[in-house]
Amino acid sequence: MADSLPLDMSSPNASIGDPELDSRFSARGRIRSAPCGGRGNDKKKKTREFVKEKYDPIVFSEFFGNSHPVEMEIGCGKGKFLVARANENPGTNFLGIDRISKFMNIGKARAQKRALANIRFVRAEARAFLTEAIAPGSVSLFHIYFPDPWPKRRHQMRRVFTSELLTLLHTRLVPEGLVEIATDDKDYFSAMKKTIAATAELWENVREMVNERILDGMNKTNYELKWAAEGRPLFYAELRAA
Image 1 (tube, rainbow, N blue to C red):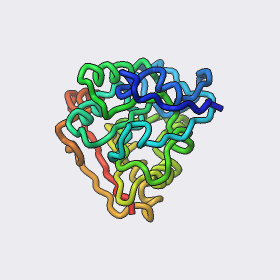
Image 2 (image 1 turned 60 degrees about the vertical axis):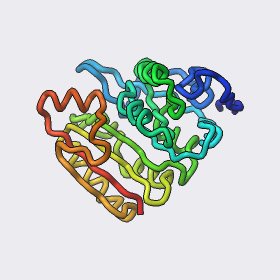
Image 3 (image 1 turned 90 degrees about the horizontal axis):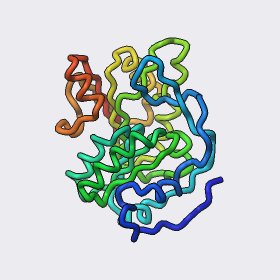
Image 4 (image 1 turned 90 degrees about the vertical axis):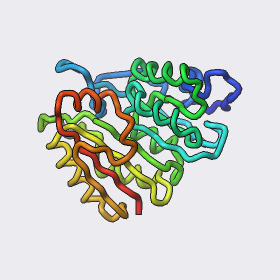
């Protein structure tokens, strides 16, 4: 089990993803090949996952040093979208998680360059982190953008977007909190809609759009810009908690 350590908010890098700070809330296990739902950059990509470890519970008022609302991006990658959103919304706190720290380091550098005090990055496996570190009713908005579609039938069990994940997200949302979703894969979006329908009792409202962001249309992820430039249709959904 990861040791519980007090936060030192006086650390000059604590507000922008200090590696020491991150390690206090990251699994301290080795990495092995296993399905986890991240998205790779080539056809020969290998899936990787943290060996199951315990995550220390996070108290957001201590973690960020204030009681502002919290938005969380699952699979934040290089952090382009989250950093832009944090820059434009100083009254909101932002937490990005990803399994691969080398990509998040780019996001940390972007936040550091802007001296943002309202953003953190944590290397973590999503389901375990949400279950163990995030308190129920504490997140105002979850962002899930362009998760790996795992198009081959034999790999689809690896998809991150499941009814179990949606149920878990719902427990972590504040009343009427939001889940924002995007994918470039039409078949995956069809599967997502079936998953949403299977958890329909959890959502007060569900919206869908094609090629138009429902939330914050001015800011885009790296994948979003890439796929749009290639002319791919982009599929969006927004869930509002009941």
